[in-house]
Image (cartoon, rainbow, N blue to C red; front, side, top):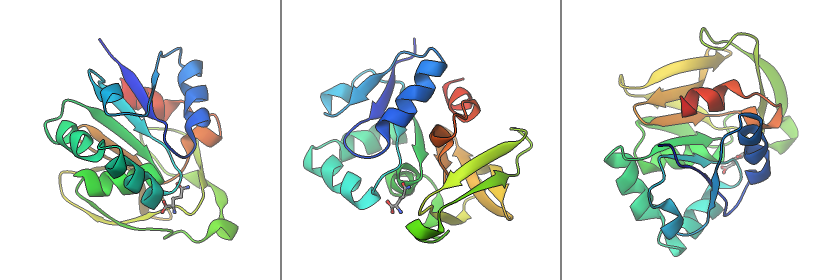
Length: 175
Ligand code: GLN
């Protein structure tokens, strides 16, 4: 039985809710460590990774989250700031924050992927994934740079599929 949550302490929560509604998936908003119990899937939205990390630590969610990810009892999908947090929570990826430029350099672009045809993505202060272990699978690239990566129970996305009604990546995460 799936139990899906969206981390709802900061960032683009509503946009992820819209996608899950489109997929007819029930979900919970996660704001406390108690909300994590029996979750099978967690989405960490875009926003501000430093703020989110600080709040997660203040609310004593960080360590529990890290443990659940490590023992693979929780599947996690991080977009943008969420992907940055995944790099700190155990995913074997190195990131450069704002690697695709500042807010002013936000852009919408075609993304290359064998798995998802005609994929487009919104990049807003997006991180660059500068390296990753062999364990990590690159599912999509932009300008030959990885932008969607998967490792076991973790899915990291540098762009924002939730901002242009792209449901396939969420569907892939929930499969
Ligand atoms: N650059 C932001 C950060 O470092 C992420 C931006 C975003 O999520 N759109 O947290």
